[in-house]
Length: 112
Length: 114
Image (cartoon, each protein chain N blue to C red):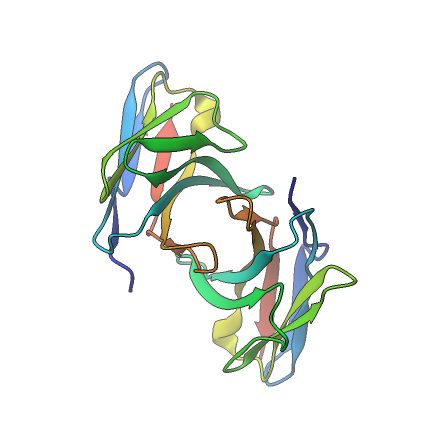
């Protein structure tokens, strides 16, 4: 299995609080991604990174920010959590264009 | 922009029979990759099979094969000899050469009946 660890695995937080999710990889892959999964929507890309300090927005980036200060770590921050951000968040990594993404086990976030 | 369409929200198949899960795509990239993932009820995303747009042959991985029809922009997943453990959500995805992003369809829920 690809070495990807997401933390925490579960989190419950209140509306308006900041939340940071962490993705850690041991594969030294260039690309890292954050997706959210909601019923009826499949997986939607939030942000991705193509190198240290190199990030870009996905299709549902509003309300989220990311940082990648080291190859192995990719952080997703919800500056002020809202109930619409209740979801399952997946981190994924890949080495290059024609390589498949390998996913972490997901973080279930509930915003009350 | 890239788009993946999976028109079958749910599919049923009898154990030991073959099943085809449909996937159509739209892209302006001349070079791209197509992927299929399986998500069992436990939640993890499992990579199944990859097809490159310039690959001459359809991809196969064990009981999984990809029926790639480039002119029709379709990349259907064929599962042969279905097993009860194949019951899961299946997602088709694509990644264009000009984009680092992997775009997913909404998925098909497959149920294998004994």
